[in-house]
Picture 1: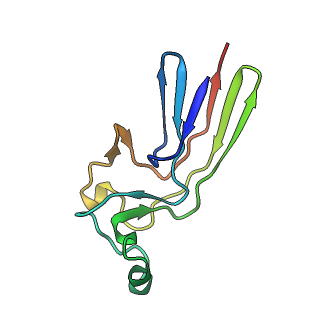
Picture 2: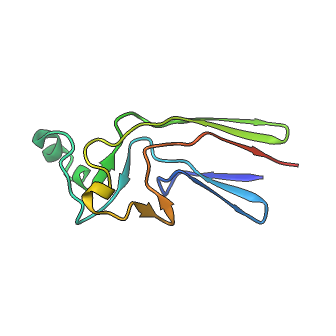
Length: 113
């Protein structure tokens, strides 16, 4: 019927052979890596968490409520915004595994037979 995954920190759904593979975004960030460093909070925070500068953080925690009923799977997601510059503003392509990097978990309704 469906497979839920959060490892890639993306907001996406792909259907293969009738099975929906739903990517649930990270609660707090997306890794951008070297070349996109940015101090998003304060120098003191950056010193305490030295890898934070390689991420694009979300202002608010993301979460979803998933409900499964007969013939239907619904995801009620939430939306936030980036802390500081977006991936595009940092010169990043803003794509990961073919999906746009967003501070969102989209609401979805999938039906099954």
